[in-house]
Image (cartoon, helix red, strand yellow):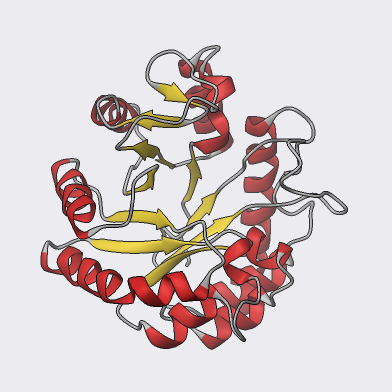
Length: 281
């Protein structure tokens, strides 16, 4: 992790893109963002999600619009190497479609969120998870699982994430450090325990004292919230990570300015990385 590149997930950007996508992309590029991780829906988004113009659903792009977006972002100098698969059931049939999309758009990773705290449900899906992971590997790509806080909730003597880590070695993860920390899990210890299972790390910074899932903003600039960011970066530097491993994933902003938060976060992240590099030298 010497030459750090920082990507941004598109989920929280919908309301900003609605008012002028070029301004958002220009602002992120000026902040030092090198890549964008789009959220892509293969099926129609439920009507309770606010629908925006140009194929946007609060930062989630329709499957039909996503290829043009990916091409546009690359033409603007951004890397696009992973995407979040939204609103799609986890079946082998759908994973085959996801693999084809990943291949056709020259992506490396397809990221899926189960959005479930039921270990029983995940146990029952384990054979399909293994088969889907093998399918992607055979196709030269990789399927990753992304967590929220619910996958860390105790259920049946364990939790979804812990059960997958211990029982399905075929799958790796895009670990959301913010949701992990918010759930009360030692994220630093987790990186140390499973250094080979997290090729991508989401930096979702939750404001100190904020409560998620209320409909109110709860995210802030990386380095200014609950994350033990210095310790996490210190641990991440010991992991077999490439330069394209850090992704800022911000759902909203308590200041009302995600782009500004990202800019502050990049300054904080790079400062910590530079400090660690100097110490090692």
